Length: 209
Image (cartoon, rainbow, N blue to C red; front, top):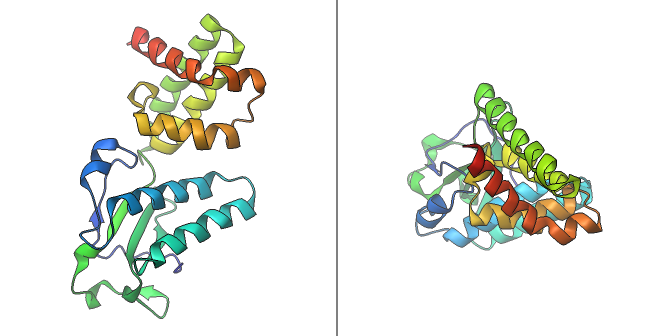
């Protein structure tokens, strides 16, 4: 891993992190396969979410090893304005810094926004909407489903800044396999019905619209 660097270089931008359509079309030219970009993004999000620092370090190490296979490295930029994951060839780094003016083929880099919305007002509106849907699920279908719905609402707000009804299949799978077991602290009752809970979230959001 290289240190964080405030310079963006001329990297390709992939807007709408986690969006299936963007994932289908965006690659780091011919040098970094799309599936590698997707896995690197997934590992980065897992590292950010991990409560245990050893677990987070393990995710970052796996990310570094994966990128090293392609002679790439990663860094995070813009912590205060919405983090962006920047992937670029290791050779771009000189003395710990990236120098865009020394790079001839800038299209070999990729930027992946890790926040769905930087604007605070937009995020607040999305979060309020998602939590309203979650509370409606709890009122209508009981507290077990409600707890799962709140966890999903938090996930969609914090990771993608998108309404729960806009969750893609990939986002739902990420929640079920990664976020829910590690961050929601579910009990056995919640685990048993979590997929049904997500269906109820979608149905409730549709009814609210």
